[in-house]
Length: 309
Image 1 (cartoon, rainbow, N blue to C red):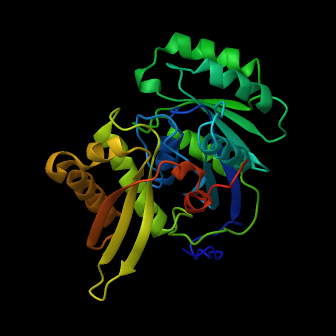
Image 2 (tube, one colour; image 1 turned 90 degrees about the vertical axis):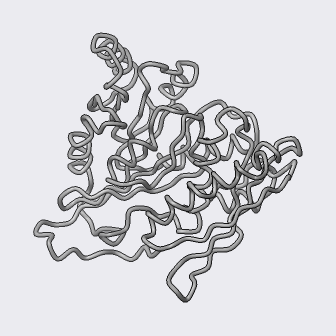
């Protein structure tokens, strides 16, 4: 995808463009919120914590403003190399942003992960906004109490109460973000919604189905690696991917009885990717066991993560 500046003939005001870092503990609803702000799916979501691995840019438009949303991995105490790379990507997403959105799940809260995050945020110079998510399933009084508690610890300019699932409160948040964007040319064409390549997005869609269909059966230690992405002469797309697992015992879990599980994963991913691209998709999956895949520099490069010690 290109990143050449866009000219919008319908813009009558001076264009505005800026970066908003979307951070928070794992599973707070950051990716779902980014999808709502953009107006279509650009980031995968699942009930599994730490679904987002690399920093992905979603691009939202609001009037004369282009809002570049850095959907970051959840910030948590890292233990492994992959954890450290994900946390580093999250903080890089916040570096020199025009605004930082801290997204909090008021029900689970994850205080052990939230409190260290607040400690770092309170000294950062960027404009900070607090987003309390999941208001559709939260009671009002505890929400207000939590907002008061968190604003007492960090100098948040504003607090927004939203539901990333239903879209409640998202328009108000989007309008406010647009007003914070500095004057300047748009960085991306008007019709571009993400900086992710089709090849990477295809792998992410398969990974989302892997999580959805296997739930707790398959540990977090799995990856989807793109092997080939080809445009056929008839306009369709041929995609080859490998599902990487860490142990031999995990292979039959992904395959399922008679290969039915991987077939279902492939069918669901193929359907969604076809709808996203607007063309027929031929998706081919196979499973590979790599015990130390999370130590592979090449895998990190595919994810868009930095290799960290």
